[in-house]
Figure 1: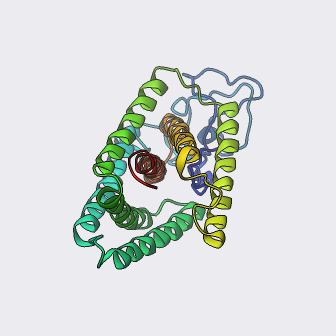
Figure 2 (figure 1 turned 60 degrees about the vertical axis):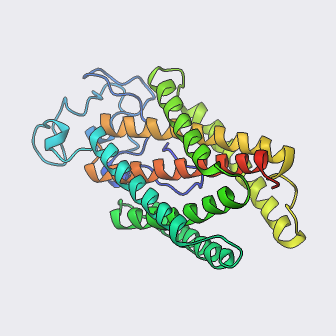
Length: 302
């Protein structure tokens, strides 16, 4: 099993390197329980099971380098610092391009059509780049950075529209809300209040697929029937679905944290830190947009 994200497009850590996500937690040289998956870096097979094989990737020969493993920082293995640095880079680029789009693409009556068109175009290109990365077997920093830059343009325009024409201060409130959810989920995950297992994964994926399907149906009705379609994104129903969207984003954050934790523990290759940054960025963008819509409904005339 591997983690995913709200757009159902992110691959887990690359299978050709062994790690596929949601393995049993590694133990210090202890045996793996019958029916659970041993560390794929120790077996060379991401689907192998070994009732008695040790699960500590540092307790046996490193198959990739042909020598006993050393500390992750010197063997090309992903570390938490790698994930933090790549995520900071990706989010930093997104924030910078969002600020530039806000400043350079005005949303007054004379320019809103052009600015919104540029924002939507950037979002569509970003979606294509995200899908391309999702189907690649290796992380591509260029694709991920380009996705972040273009997504930032879209967020800058849509945030400016909401903040200046619908609900003043909405963008900052959405940023604060997104940060609060991130910190709350991280604390809950580290404290063990959220247990990410196969049942949790299945529930979140089923709920997310249902949510996205309803939003797609609503969009189709909106495009061909006018108005807000079935009304899932405005009024009372809009508030309910906005809250559900934020909760789903929080669940995907927990899945992301689990995948990153397992990747570090099992010695995923260092370049996989870019995939972790990509997934976290996707999830945070999802949460931010849900907060932005919620605030627009509550404070504006949406």
